[in-house]
Length: 106
Image 1 (cartoon, rainbow, N blue to C red):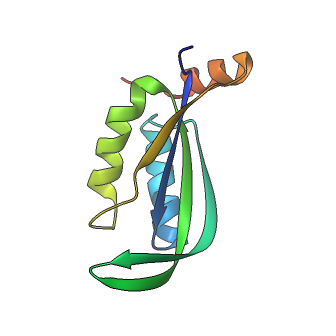
Image 2: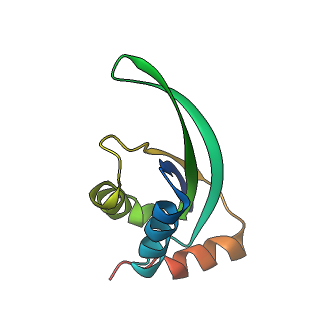
């Protein structure tokens, strides 16, 4: 079965940065929807355990946009090593059609 959607997870250091990135991805038609969720993260970075407030972005996109989306996220991200996790997803027919229409590569 072929995926008709891709879910991508990344984080940004503030609501303002997350919102700016989300708006840009939507304007570029690389995402159909970006859900933002504030969270507290604990992680290992450069040999130390760190803790910070972040905003998680759950990006919903079409499989044909994934490579361009990754390039755009990496080029605009505020982190040296941004989180980039993605997985294929199945969507209902009407949602998949909406997503495909929103994510049109020019």
